Amino acid sequence: MEDSVEVILQHKSCKLSDHTQEKPLVTAASGALLVGVYGLWSLFALPGFRKVPICLKVPYLPSCRTQTQNVMKLLHGRAGCLADLGSGDGRLTDLSKYNNVTVFLAPGVMEVLGRKLEKELPDEARVIACRFPFPDWTPTATEGEGQDQTWAYDMNAIRKLSTQATMR
Ligand SMILES: C[S@@+](CC[C@H](N)C(=O)[O-])C[C@H]1O[C@@H](n2cnc3c(N)ncnc32)[C@H](O)[C@@H]1O
Image 1 (cartoon, rainbow, N blue to C red):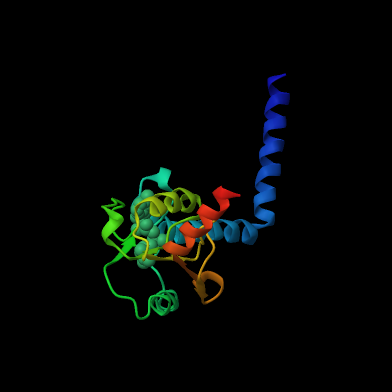
Image 2: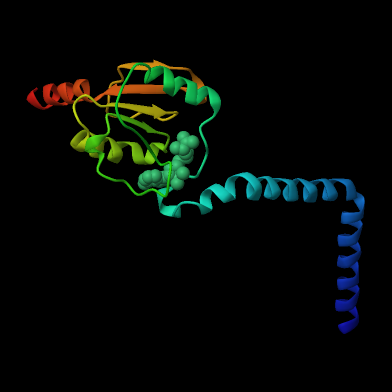
């Protein structure tokens, strides 16, 4: 009985080693691919996720040149203070003194942020959203396309539209 178990085990291990020897290139290539994917992830994505609490799900990803140029076009000619929400450690201060606000966050936070901005910003404020628009707001203007698209929202127009919507 023991002999037959040994024979079976020997037979199986022969089969296994035969199999890996058959395709050493495929095995090496899959290993290299996995190591490469992990390397790219830890180099580019992981550091961003480490900078914010995981529950916020908004990694650090700096605006590119085209995106920043689109933002500046939509703010052209405007005066007053500018706040870039999400430029620091995520703490928000009193928003009422800012009449220019830019945000490059994630779709998951835009709705709740929109409600906060609508409550706190002055009427003459303009908000610029990068890459992800506010789901409930109608933009006054937009610049660029694809990943670099930016949208401008004027608070007085947003408030007028919400008042009209609640009166209906
Ligand atoms: C996509 S990056 C944009 C960075 C910079 N504003 C820019 O345009 O280059 C998003 C930033 O928002 C910050 N952030 C994430 N959640 C936030 C929150 N709830 N409040 C404020 N900032 C937040 C992150 O720390 C991250 O630095």
